[in-house]
Structure formats: structure tokens, C-alpha cells
Image 1 (cartoon, each protein chain N blue to C red):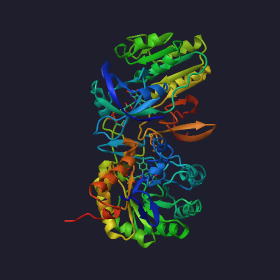
Image 2: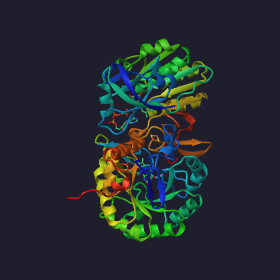
Image 3: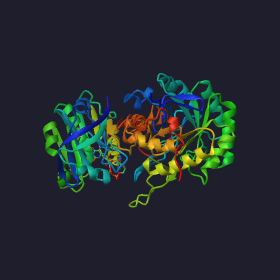
Image 4: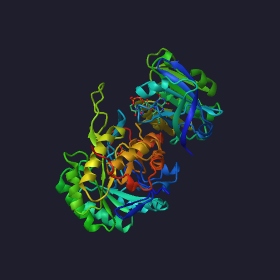
Amino acid sequence: MPDRYLCEVISNETLCDGVFAVAVVCGDLAGEALAGQFVHVKCGDERLLRRPISICCVSGGSLKLVFEVKGKGTSWLSRIKPGETIDILGPLGRGFSLPEGKVALVGGGIGVPPLLFAAELAGGSATSVLGFRSGDRAIMKDAFESACEKVLIATDDGSLGYHGPVTLPLKELLEGEGYGAILACGPRPMLNAVAGLCEQFGVPCQVSLEEKMGCGIGACLVCACATVSGGVKDMSRVCVDGPVFDATEIVWSGWDA
Amino acid sequence: MRDLSVNFAGVSFKNPIVVASGTFGFGREYGEYYDLSMLGGICVKGLTLVPRLGNKPPRIAETAMGMLNSVGLQNPGVDSFIEDELPFLRKHDTVVIANISGNTIEEYALMAEKLSEAKVDMLEVNVSCPNVKAGGMQFGTSAQGVASVTQAVKSRASIPVMVKLSPNVTDIAEMAVAAEASGADAVSLINTLLAMRIDTATRKPMLHNNVGGLSGPAIFPVAVRMVWQVASALKIPVLGMGGVMDGDNAIEMMLAGAKLVGVGTACFEDPYAPIGVIDGVGAYMAEYGLSSTDEIVGKVELN
Ligand SMILES: Cc1cc2nc3c(=O)[nH]c(=O)nc-3n(C[C@H](O)[C@H](O)[C@H](O)COP(=O)(O)OP(=O)(O)OC[C@H]3O[C@@H](n4cnc5c(N)ncnc54)[C@H](O)[C@@H]3O)c2cc1C
Ligand SMILES: Cc1cc2nc3c(=O)[nH]c(=O)nc-3n(C[C@H](O)[C@H](O)[C@H](O)COP(=O)(O)O)c2cc1C
Ligand code: FES
């Protein structure tokens, strides 16, 4: 069951400019967490709302959170030191489901870290397609290389791997071999493009969405996302119905559509 | 023996702490964290006659010690509540308060009838939602509107009726008096304060709805003042809320005149917040050797 935990920080590492990896001890949480789930993190006493951060991976009794500094909350979190404690709620949300067959993981920018957990669960057989702004921001490359059969990288400026969006190598991949599922996490336009490609190739696709949150547990309805299931339009809650959704459930544009 | 129980408009609550409408869903989610029977009462998510999908996201924006929301009364409708949610709530030993919003006065009355038949314990009539165009606040910002809705609900309800007042008025006591004169059994306040935030980089409002309702600690002193003004003007009891985070805040509300205290936004910071507030009230009573909350309610010593 998800719960509120006060966890000791064991490390805080800078992965690239503005991106940090914080590891915390939490046996119960680490034991229960599923790939694609998140934790809701209290970022100091001055901020009322918690910040949702995906679980990057678990090992033993600890879990790792990888995040980019965006505003005051993540900035506070980036200054946390080993030995200090953070207040987290979790594990929350519906994670990825790993189907039979070969899996490709598609990540963009700060959407890359939570895919590591899925790669580890796939037992070394997954292919990863990771997109970054530039080569110097290609975080966790080594970790993915040791957890996956194959890792393809694309950068916006061409400084590493393919020059262009992740859909470039992904298209090549899908033309080459059959995949049982694509699991994607990243900015919404990227997810939309990946979902489009998957539809074209007839491959099931799961996407991890972001929305601003209040409670994080399904009670307040602020994290709404327009979905459609069996032809019926609904407002789903990203925090409990997601963050991972089947791509065909998402109303990608025009909420009134 | 310390006694936290409260008789409020003829309904008995085991303690004075009630969770606020819209912040607690229909109880299922927080029920995974603790036994809902520990709560004095639960005000359920605002109900409408027909289901509503609510407003487009983003629906939340943070601000200094507070938040703005523009959910827009997303809910499954009153019939689905009665069928699918009420039986679950009824398994717990806590007071169930149904919060209702209508587009028309007849809608309020019809919902009051349905929910009376379904035997919820109490109605909270929301005439103060800042997030929907029709209904909600349009009735709550004039004494005439408050009176019309209250009379219509009272004429069709067979359970106690509490009217939830909007703080977005010049004189909230005037609205409270109108509710009382129209037969309300209690009033609750405050709903959220109409507010706005703008992203300076994009020049766009942070909420898709442009404006939303401010809640959380930022509104606490405003809520205390309004509860005090209203409680001083009425004979019927008052449920006070707005920014209550801990037991001490709840005591402050009670001193201002609130017989029951609502806890809302605090749940987002800590799911256990309402339990902490109940414990805090008990601890205060123990510290000051009080045997009943009657020794606190309205007992502010004015200068
Ligand atoms: C399910 C989920 C998982 C996430 N996982 C990660 C992750 O692993 N690593 C990472 O770096 N980021 C992740 N994010 C995004 C992260 O939550 C935001 O970057 C963060 O909340 C920004 O907080 P801030 O105080 O620094 O920024 P501010 O801009 O100061 O935040 C203001 C408010 O907006 C909210 N907010 C701002 N941006 C976002 C956003 N993109 N998503 C949700 N809320 C937002 C904040 O939580 C806060 O309530 C995730 C978001 C979601 C919904
Ligand atoms: C996300 C959210 C949704 C709300 N929805 C409702 C609602 O449906 N009906 C209602 O009467 N009040 C609603 N409210 C107002 C609260 O019940 C309460 O009056 C207000 O938030 C002040 O209390 P607080 O500061 O403790 O949250 C909502 C508040 C929030 C934050
Ligand atoms: S954040 Fe409250 S319902 Fe999703």
C-alpha cells in the first residue's frame, strides 16, 4: 500500500547541468514499487504542494529519483544532502505493464530515467531509444547500455547519435523488427509522435503523461487528462488512472474533440 | 473525561473535524490511509444533477502557502453518487454530508429530494463555487439568491440543510443572515477566494480557466475573520474552514465561533492531516483541562 515515509537521503549526484540523481533509503517503498510509478515529494516547508517525481530505479532497500531543476521545488530538492530526510508519498499511480515479446523503451530528456526501471524488469532484452537536446545532456547512457540489448540515441543538435527526434531511429527500428510493445516517457509532443508511429506500425504503445497535481492519490481531480475509452469521453486522473496510459485512450488534441 | 463530540444542527458528530468538499473525493482514496470512521464527518465532492467533466487543465496553480484550483465541479452526478459511492461511505461510522450545486433553483431542490430519500445525514448547499459559469456563485453573491436557494432546498429536504457561503462578497454576514432567515439549519464557510496567477514568461494565466479559487494557509486569517463575523450574527451553528493545517488552527476557528471545523487543502500536503488536527484539538483540551468543545466555541475574548 502507498504511504507517507520520511526517508534518509544516501546520495545526491549531479548527472549533467541542472539534472540530479537523489537516492533515498526506503525498504517498504522500494519493495512495492513498479516501473512507471511515481512518488510525491515534499520540497521544504515553504511550498504547500508536493512534487511528483518518477521512480528511476530501485536497488535493495533504496530508490533513486532523477530530476531536472525547473522551479523552486526541484531547486530545493537539488540542494538536499546525504543524511538529511525527505518526506515522500508513494508508490503512486499505474505503472508500465511489460507484455510478452520484445519491448522498446522510448524516452525524451527528463522522461528517460523512469524507463531504466522498465529496462531492468525486461531482463536485458529491451531496446532503448533515447532522445536529448545534445550529447552533453545524454544522462544515464551507461546504465541503459548495461540494462538493455541495444541503445539508440538521438540528439536535437546531432552532437551524439542520430540528428533529429527519437522518432527517426524508432521508425527504422519498427521497420526492421516486430515489437510487442513500446513504452514511452517524455514531453507530450514526443509522446504524440511516438503514438502516431506505433499506430502506423500496429504496435501497442503505453505513454507516461505529466499533469500538475494536488493530492497525488486520486481525490482532488486537479490532474485531469482527456481520455476516450470505448467511444466514451472522460476526464481521467493522471495520478491514479495514469501516469501510464494506453496511447489509444488519450485525446491528443482539442479537448472538445 | 474529554468529550470531543458535537451536536450540530441535530446531527451528532464524534469530533468537530470534517473533511472539506472537493478535497477528499468520496473518501475511497484517503480510506486506504486510515479508517474513515476516525473523522467527525465527510463533505463529499460537489454533486450536480447530471454528470460533469469539469474544466480543461491545468486546473491547479501553486501560490505562496496556498493554491488555486479550477476543477469546475467534475463529478459523476447525484444518481451515480447514491448508487455507487454512498454504500461505501455508509460502511463507516462517520457523518456523510452531500455537497450540491445547481444550475437552477429547481435542480437544487430536486437533488435535495433525492439525497433526503437516500438518507445522507446532511446537505451542504454550495452557492459559492467560483469555477462554473452557471450556478454556484451566481446565487451566493446576493442575499436574494441565497434566500431563494435555501427556501427551495428546505421545502424539499427532510434532512438538515447547511448553506455554504462564498467569501467573494462585500458582507458575508448579510448572506449568512439571509440563509438563516430562509430556514437554513447551519452555514459553512469559507469556500475559495476568487483568484488569478499569470505566467510572466508566456503571459498566459496559469489556469486554463484563467481564474480559480484560492485555498490553503494563505486564506486562513480571512476565514477566521469571516467565521467570527458570521457566528456573531447568527443563532444557527457554523462550520468554519479555510486553510486549517493543524490542531491549533482548528482551535482558532472554534474560538472565532465555529462549532465544526473543515480540513481541505491540508490533505494534499499530508494525507493524515485531518487525523493530526483531531489529535491536536484533543491535546489542546487536555492541556487547558477542558471537558467539552463548548468551552472553546465562540469564546474569543475581544479587546
Ligand atoms: C507523474 C509525473 C512524474 C514526473 N517525473 C519526473 C521525473 O522523474 N523527473 C523530473 O525532473 N520531473 C518529473 N516530473 C515533472 C516534475 O513534477 C516537475 O518538473 C516539478 O513538479 C516542477 O516543480 P518546481 O517546483 O521545480 O517547478 P514550479 O514551476 O515552481 O512548480 C510550480 C507548480 O507546478 C507544478 N509543475 C510544474 N511543472 C510540472 C510538470 N511538468 N509536471 C507536473 N507538475 C508540474 C509543480 O509540481 C508545482 O506544483 C514528473 C511529473 C509527473 C506528473
Ligand atoms: C481542489 C478543490 C476542489 C474543491 N471542490 C469543492 C466543491 O466541489 N464544492 C465545494 O463546496 N467546495 C469545494 N472546494 C472548497 C473547499 O471545500 C474549501 O471550502 C476551501 O478549499 C477552503 O478550505 P481549505 O483551505 O482547508 O482547503 C474545493 C477546494 C479545492 C482545493
Ligand atoms: S492529483 Fe488529486 S486527483 Fe490527481
